[in-house]
Length: 74
Image (cartoon, rainbow, N blue to C red):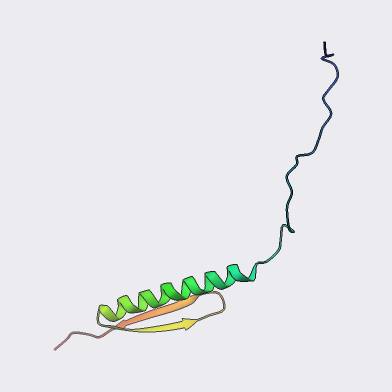
């Protein structure tokens, strides 16, 4: 029988991490940039479909899309 007073020996888990925890993947940044640009173009297309005039500007951390509509007074 085993003695209940003896604690089992700790063994670390066998998981292996292939890289550092804080590494930066350039392809992820590129994919995020392209997807946000595609979303900006989709919004500009929607603006044009609603008789507007889109302006797309890139700032250092976001896309700024402005949709100016033509006034229908007349």
